[in-house]
Image 1 (cartoon, rainbow, N blue to C red):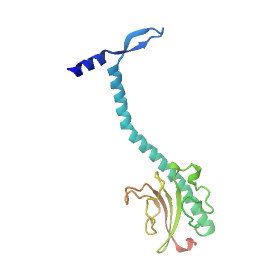
Image 2: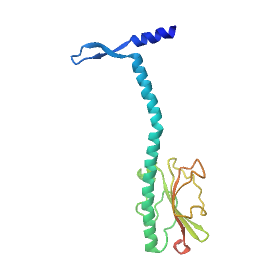
Image 3: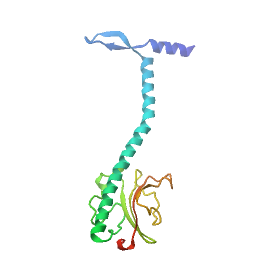
Image 4: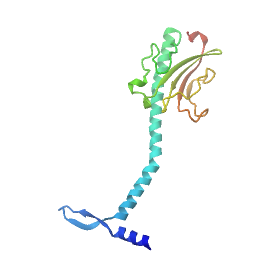
Length: 180
């Protein structure tokens, strides 16, 4: 019975609305109506936030794919011009002759994360890869020369749920283009 009296008194409270002349009017919204409207807006925003965040992540990973594609084209041009791929020098360091490699210190990379150019010796040649370290800015994908022999993009979530890395493999390359 007490709850009914409280709800009835809340319902009867009116939030006055001023008209154009600045006079207060009897018309208005009750506190209960405002409360219900606020709850509905809150629920809708809670439901929409994960979808919004997923869209933002897709955008950032799409941007990383564009950067990685540019790096790949420059690596292939370097290989054609010099006869071999540049030396592997470590994460977030620009390989010689590669201009569109963006370092994390420039704040132009998605999530201010890192890219890494890798050239690993493998049976039959070398595997050339570009890795984007993802949202957590750490390499979570395996560093193995026996993986990713086929060219293309790889997302190692299949191997580890913790990995948010994106890998672009140029595939297994013949020994003569592996250089040093």
